[in-house]
Amino acid sequence: MQNLYPLFERNRILKKELLWSLRDYSFAHIQLEYQEYEQGILRGYEIKVRENDLVIGPGIFKYGNFVCLQTEEERIPYSPKEQPQYLRMKVEVDRTSQDYIAYKMEYYVTTDEKKEENEFELCRFHLRSGARLRDQYRDFGDMETEFDTVSLIYSDWGGLGGKTLSPAIIKYFARIILESENSQLEDRSFAYLCLTQPGAVPVHVLASYISKRNGIRLEEVVNNQLIYQSMREIIKEIQKGNKEGAGSRRERHRIFVD
Image (cartoon, rainbow, N blue to C red):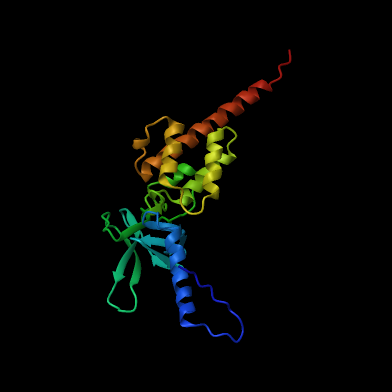
């Protein structure tokens, strides 16, 4: 076996074999990098609210064994409804051409909770009439607010070993941990890992940390909602310790004068 690397020099003509190698390397590299990942969002796909549109950022997505690229933003209109809505991506494979296979991605907002096998959730929200949809959060617990807030908890992220939680949630958790004086060494080590991890943190890493940190069985950490809620409780515990610690420090610095 051999690998051909074209030499781009003046007055040299690229032979067809070298053009084929360029074609193969460009696809093979990204396919090999993510071959052990679960299908779903792999990188990017940041969701932003701009006026009456949901803006989907560029990213990388895996469907079946094929890795797809989205290189431009997509804008999807939305409007208030008195029920939950879901921003989804639908993937269809077109094999009608003899020259290529086309992976077509369609983005839309629906009120139908049921998903097909080729549909993936990017976010969900419940926007009431007269309210404004927001994508900024007051605190970690606010990410689960029922109304008028973009929720990323149930978005379909693919990671090593299975579906996992959105990096936006994990990195927010990590930043709060590092800002807290009462966080433990294992918390801070986990936070550093989350902030330096490209893409999503594998689900078995999240489950293992939560299991050891909260003293629960590993098999009880089974889905994104439970992972998020467990992380929320960890933050509450740490922040409660911060307040108690601050109170005890103030108590030690009191001066009594007779």
